[in-house]
Image (cartoon, rainbow over all chains, first blue to last red):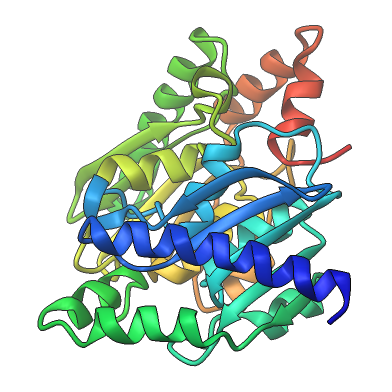
Length: 153
Length: 153
């Protein structure tokens, strides 16, 4: 295993820990960490249900927690689920050059668009990330929460 | 003047009032209101400086304040400045069908991309909105804040 792949697995596991924390609190199991030079500078998870905040997706909560940055050009974002257009637009606007995605099976997201805009996207197809979403969606009523999260009817 | 144009001017003025409130608090003068059926259901302004929150652009703060919505398909977003990619992605993800933009002179934003994705975009080219950004940018040091806001070097 290369060092980079080892790092990617390590930080993705941290993003998944955030997702599990969110699910334990009754929220959607989507987490993210922002990394600079091998250190986590921000970590967050979807807080839409917990805070009644429609913009608090995992990636957004992570960016918020990281606080203001002079630049994102030296950062990597790890997220358990392929990003929606809100989070995709934020990644592009902030100029994050590399995004590691846990899975795109439960939600397709916008990986081709990110790549089109010059972002390096790595899809890990991680069983742990897929399983967290599956467990969440298996609970009655949660499918409606998920559809609301991505504003789908 | 048509009723729609009258309404658009009224709600844009409310967005500008939010922008002015933000500037009075030392923040960037960008405001937004979300409207459904002729009523404001959310209003906000850029809070990046005030709250140290990089995702708190005017439109995002407005969406947050509006809280969770079952649908955005019957809403109109009014914003004083042409939206950045974060706010653009959010408008698209949430399915807001119509956006009224105060001005695109101080920041080009992403109006063509919004239109490409099926959003009706109306540019008001409003003197009040332009003037607010101009007054803000004329203050020494504020240009750097603005560049940080849109993550430009």
